[in-house]
Length: 157
Image 1 (cartoon, rainbow, N blue to C red):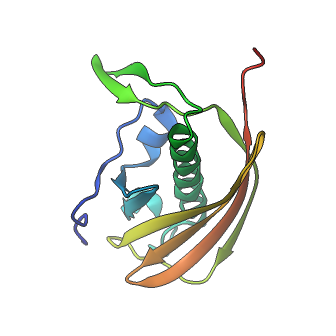
Image 2 (tube, rainbow, N blue to C red; image 1 turned 180 degrees about the vertical axis):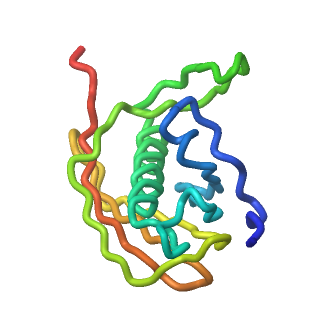
Image 3 (cartoon, one colour; image 1 turned 90 degrees about the vertical axis):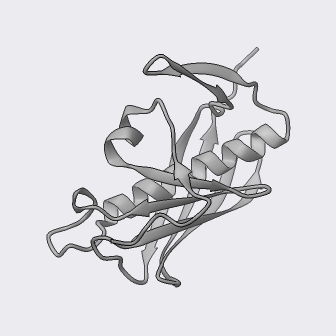
């Protein structure tokens, strides 16, 4: 089984969905976050290949987090504190958002035990919509591209 690369840490979250489908890892760069997944049996299809649904799942999570980071950098989010098993986690919880559209193009695969890395490119961050691509790679080869549009749910104050 491939080891988690240096610099990646376990993604701590209060989201039951993310907790149940992970573990996911992240690595913060200057203006973005890389995401990673060590492919486990629960992430695979019957052929022991990374399931297409998991490709979409980690891409959706990575895109949402990267949009949140850009909003945070622009000063459009406020830091709050949430609790996970009684341990407070400080940081930007993210502007509420919803996936409006997501299209996935598969160009390769990953096997049980492989490390898959996700890089996100946010193309446009508008007042109500954000447009981004996620690129998934395994062993230095691109295995999928996911294009998404997210609706930013802003308070009406």
